[in-house]
Amino acid sequence: MKGPLMPFAAKMIEHLESQGYAPETVNRKMRLVGKLSRFLQETGQTVSNLGTATLEKFASQGELTSSDRVTPTALVWLIELLAKQGELALSVVPSPPDGDLLDRYRHYLAIERGLLPKTVTTYARVAQRFLTEHPEHNLGGLSPAEVARYVTRECRRLDSVREAERLVTVLRSLLSFALLDGVIPSPLSAVVPSVARWGGASLPRGLAPEQLAAMLASCDRGEPKGKRNYALLVLLSRLGLRAAEVAALRLEDIDWRAGEIIVRGKGRSEERLPLPVDVGAAIADYLRHGRPDRAEQREVFLRLIAPSRGLAPQGVSEVVRAASERAGVGSFGAHRLRHTAASEMLRAGASLPEVAQVLRHRRITTTAIYAKVDYLALRELAMPWPGAAR
Image 1 (spheres, rainbow, N blue to C red):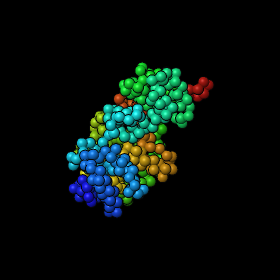
Image 2 (spheres, rainbow, N blue to C red; image 1 turned 135 degrees about the vertical axis):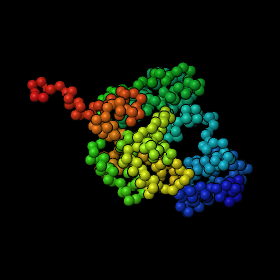
Image 3 (spheres, rainbow, N blue to C red; image 1 turned 90 degrees about the vertical axis):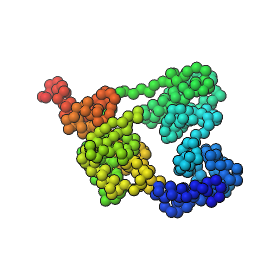
Image 4 (cartoon, helix red, strand yellow; image 1 turned 90 degrees about the horizontal axis):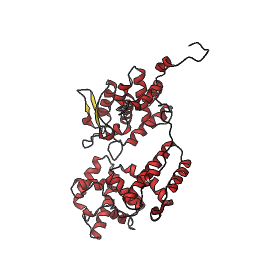
């Protein structure tokens, strides 16, 4: 290897091997790094010049083949490694906010709002559709009636209330930013109409005990993947954790002597919950016999293929979805097991405040929706039908 990246070659190989990559994959990635290093040398650049613009120029050169798949995402491991070595100031180098409105909006969401990359991508996709119809140079004359008409028309083509609510949320955010950015002269976010939703109309959909048992039985606990998935499903169904909370669980968050775990929830909150015996046994079996031996990875639940890192919230939900489909009980994500945990606690005699404490709801009214699934308790309150025996 030649060029400014050569001094870091040994560290790169060590890092890739520690992430569980096969030797041929390590060689392929290092060949790509070698081409990038030569590109930096030929263009008179140093390691500190690595960023989105540099990678885009590198990707456009004719020397690369389609198998190289050069994108900022494909080389994010390199940028993170160089950041740890002190060669880059940031693990992810953001684009400067000097592009069009959509670029500036992305930068605002990522840097000033601190949103996750996936959330930024979702917001930008919805905003781009609006800006295609209402370009930046025309936004100064945008009227409240045009905003309302756009929302009304777009909501008709969407498949769910959730998608409509996302459209409204993003549009309010975009128009608020456009005002701050000086693109529009007056506030328009307040004129974005709300989406009608009948609060409390739906029932929380939990699983019957036999359905949950079928999902747990679908995990092959003789294999590392099955041990991980079984422990994950037991944790979700017994304590009602959210997918992001399971993904954020770290080895040091489990206090084995006290029988407690630390849950990192919404709003960066941290709360302790008791660790049931069956949950602890499932996690311990996975940690001892199924989890990859990666000392640098502190997340409890890891990917089993390279790169070896903690499961993302989407990965947690996909584990649940795959298990539900294997068991033949439907196709759903992790939140269904949160509903299941709440319903089972109520059936076992827990009060709503106790359920709210386990689920970490800020308002008891949020937990009150589960009262509708406690059929035995509701039967005592039901009035007899006129003329019928109770």
